[in-house]
Image (cartoon, rainbow, N blue to C red; front, top):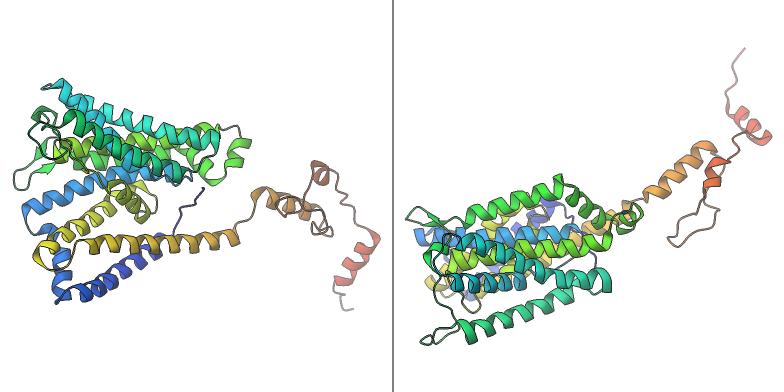
Amino acid sequence: MRMSIRPKTAVTVGLVLLGVVVGLYGLFALTSDNPMSALQGLFSGAVSSPGRIAQWLSYASFLMITGASVCLVFRVGMFSIGAEGQVFVAALLSGALVLMLGPSPFALPLAIVAAALAGFLWGVISGLMKAYLGADEIVTTLMMNYIATFLFAFVVKEFLQPADAGFPVSEFFDPSSWFPTVGSSPAISTTLVLGVAVCLITSLVLNRSRFGYRLRVVGSSPRFAHANGMPVARLIWLSIAVSGAVAGLAGAAIAFGGTNRLILGMATGIGFDGILVALLAANRPILVPVMALAYGFLRTGGDVIQITSNVPRDIVVVLQGVIILVLAAGMRYWEQRADRTVVDPAASSTTVALATAHPAKSLLGRPKGASGRPTTSASDTSSVDVTPTAEEDTERSSRVPRQRS
């Protein structure tokens, strides 16, 4: 499934913000005795205490990484939803490695590398199936998510769970493997720095590198890329794999900068929230940190209002679905408008050449190819007779105004 992800940012985000405010008030009116108080609690809950601020920034940092990973694969036109599975596999492999290593100054760097490698290899599977077998990336990545989730639960429960634990969870990692924190109240994890750095690097790769240029060309026109000698199949599977490597960094950030151990369901929803953040950022990694902070603010506020009022936290999940629907409708609208205005460059250049050489001859009478456009050949443009006929001379002379004597 190919998808062009180029929404008009201002209009789409404006619709989303309007829908958020109106939708929240309507939902709170149905579920709360005081909807204005609940709405105020939602938007102030993330900054209600130092701990909430730390929770907000930590969750936003995870969204930055998964959002950047989604932007990578979206840029090549693939709608991959495998970030969540890649996060789980990366957390599992890096966590198991750190538990085996024990205290070590190299534990965190090795864990980050292992997480990126695990995400890369997990993405390679879906990428190869898409590139060489034509399998739909939505189906394959969704199935890989299920495999990763159940594999994570199985390994943690059967091999890493302590004997006295009544829930699938591993032992705490050694503090030498934790991400450092800044400050004490609140203690901000340096995963926020990692998230911003990943977004900046992803933006540079997509917009300033040869690899990013090729991804953009393949995403815009695979046939054009193939005609110019680009390895389209390799770029397709490589984009999904590199996206998996970036998502794997989120697995390391959650494991060593969030929970500090492996817990069943520790990354549930983080991949799909990353998709939403990428859509809100209009597939621009440079905007992902802003949207991640905004959405993380909303999710943290949802946790607060569940405690302080009778509004369920699931209201925020419902709102997430509404936002996705609005974005999908907006993207479809702008995509249809673009389809009505885009002209095939090859056909338009040929038409202009013929029209310039011989205005009296039209392409409308020529046979049409598979695309529905008139077909031309090299001889059509090279052997066009530009000598005016007698009829044309007569017609031109009749249009010249006569001078008065």
